[in-house]
Each structure stands twice: as C-alpha cells, then as structure tokens.
Image (cartoon, rainbow, N blue to C red; front, side, top):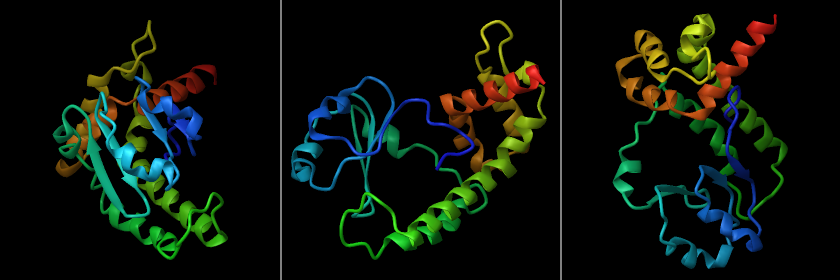
Amino acid sequence: MVNPFRWEHVLIPVLPDICEGYLEAPVPFLIGIPKDYKENKEFFNIVWSRDTLIVVLDEGKVYFHGPDPKSLKNSPLPKLKGLKEQIAKGYKAFESETELRYSPSEKQIKAIRSIQQAIEKSFNKLLLNQVNKANYKELLNESTKELNIDAAKKLLKKVSHNSDIEFLEKFCETQMLAGYIKEKYENKATS
C-alpha cells in the first residue's frame, strides 16, 4: 500500500497470540491483530508506553493511546488533492464482509490495487517528481548518506499546497522517504 516507499520497520500481518510481546516493542511497527484477540477488552486496557494508533477495521474506528494521545490526534493528514475521497471509493469492496478473511476476494484485490494506484499517483504528482528531479547530493549527507531533512523540507515547500505542508514536513522525517531517496541516489551513482 505504500509503494513506491517501503515500510522500514516491523510488519506482522497477523500476530499470533504467543507473540503478543511484540506489542511492547520499542520500535515503530504495523501489526495486524485478529478480531477475537483476547476479546479485545484486555487489548484496549494495555498501558501503552508511547503514542499508539489502533485502527479497528471492522468498526471503521481509530483509537489513540499512549502517554499523550493528543499528539496523535493533532497529526496532520494529507489532503493531496482529494486523496482521501479517491481511496474511499475502493474501500466499498470491503464493506459487505461479515467475517474475518485472511485472503481477499478478487473484487477486494482489484480494490486494493486501485487504492494503491491512487496513492502512488498522488505521491508521484506532489512529491516524488520533485524529489526525482532534485540533486541527490543536496538531499543526502555525502559522508553518512543520511537524509538532509531540512533540504528535503525546503524542496517540498516550494511545490506543496499550503494545506499539505505540515504533513509533508512530518513525512520528510520518516525512514520511508529517507530509504527511497537513498535507493534512488545509489541507482544514479551506479548508472
């Protein structure tokens, strides 16, 4: 779903009960938990040591947990020229499901692809075209090959709509963008 970016941290599509310790990992993670996990009551009573966003797909609800739940609630969301409304259409393929499925139907696979394409198209238009045109030596520290976050923010501010600047500034701080730029830089350097 985040193509052409890659999630650089822990990703567990369905967490087995015996691995519940992963929920307290001190690193960013995306973990899927089955609907019947400990009847969900205990799960929501966990005292999270850091900001944690819980998305309950069956209910279409988002819960904020952690030392300062307000920090997550105030996180900027991208407008990206109506991306949210575009991808909402694709989610209709999942609304009629009444039971937990580990394998998507053909209709859902098509919906997932259309959602992914909408996300990729938005990011290409508003962000990656500029990153790809940029001088990678200005975006990466020459010695450490770390992303120069200030340079990336400056580049994106030039081309962003005001409503997206706050989101894109946060996005510049992610490992996903740093990984993308580093990979592109290495490809340019070897060609």
